[in-house]
Image (cartoon, rainbow, N blue to C red; front, side):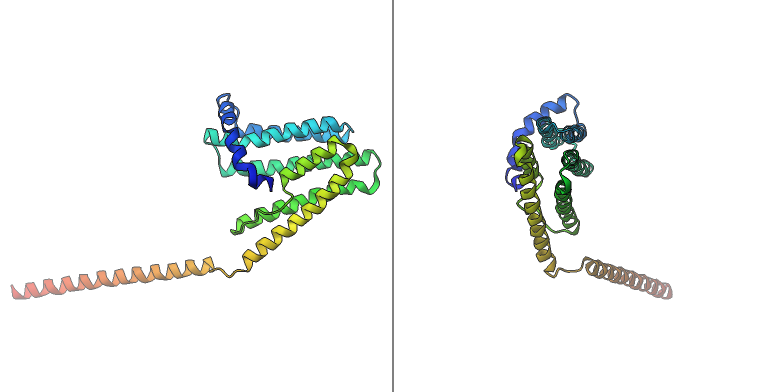
Amino acid sequence: MLDRRFRTNIERGLRPVGQNLKRTGVTADHLTLAGVVMALGGAVAIGAGNLPLGLFFLVLAAVPDALDGAVAKASGTASPRGSFFDSVADRVSDALLFGGVAWYFAADDRGLLVMLPVAVLGASMLISYERAKADALGFDAKVGIMERAERLILLGLGLLFEALLVPVLVVMLVLTLVTAGQRFATVWAQASIERPDPRARRRTARRRARASRAQLRGAGGGTWRTRVAESRRRIGRE
């Protein structure tokens, strides 16, 4: 939700920063990788019980994630490869951070609470898959009230106030599941609208192309026979 509303303005504001970073030789891939490293640091800090340090690393992980797109556009290196790398890195970072929370609960002997961050992670992977699959099929699944930006903000709130960590994860899980339902319903509605089969269109185009080639060959053949007959008449007259 926040991503859709503010991404354009944020990218516009970060454009000068991206241009300055480009001059230093820093690439978008460097920033994406730095974000994963910061997420790893956050996971270790959270798992060790140092939640304020985990919050610090969470913020550090978010900064490169916001800047890598700006650097890619400023340097003219934005590409499907970079987008793929960024998406995979986001999933790895999420797994590390929520894995760190599960580690923290396990070390604190919280029992079944260990499964709460695991459930949030699983639900977040589900909505990411729904969007990726929808994009691959030509549908739009960019809907939902709990996307990655909202999850990171709520996680930061839980790390800042330890007493809120469990309630925040519960809210996060519920809203992420609601988002999964929203995306499923949206894509289902789009996919239920009958659309022309692209394979049928290709078959029709191939048939028309073959018919056109046959007509051209026929026209060419008729012209050649006409020329031969005309040549024979000329020879006969001579």
